[in-house]
Image (cartoon, rainbow, N blue to C red):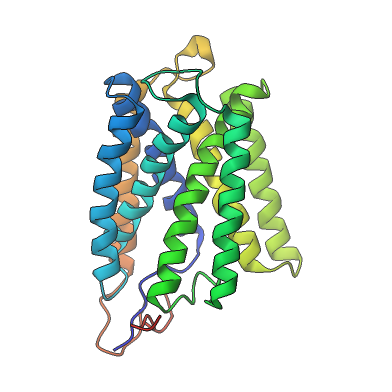
Length: 270
């Protein structure tokens, strides 16, 4: 039997992605900074959880929204700590013995380019709605993990190093996202390319949005704090996942997804 394990890219997909990565930012700050666990210990904790839920996703035989979006959340949480460790160095605050946001973003951009180069060399489909092998799925999650890590570094660079601040950085990235939507609908630019550009941009959008939500008012934020900000985002993410789960009818063997309108086609090949 072949099945579809990955969601179609719709407005709901992007809403879930933005909320998930924003929660990853605030939850990472909650555990690593507010609770004082530090970047290294927090990264180890998040990585363990991420690998566990990723194993469930890989073993699954169909698309399960709760599992899929928990993995995406995991990539954001792991990526947040990985980026902070790389850019700021070990610790539990704004340490200054790391590479810095600019160099960190450059290194991660290079790593993401390498992931896509390997993906291209394997000949696997890069259409995120047509991935049908284990190898393709592995490359998909590798690209997501690196892109979310890059998004954290680039978001921090944009907010801090350029002097824009959290809110202006958020508005700038939102404007870029609007341009991508226009390009998608008005031109013939490759949709896979646009997807990955948007996927990377939603991470700094979430990083800037999360910082704007949790940072103190005197630092340009709304002052919700990491605890209440994470709690509010968790409720919103759960509500969206429940909504999508209700829309995705369990497929009959060899059947079709009534809400997504696409045949289940994920196979066991490589």
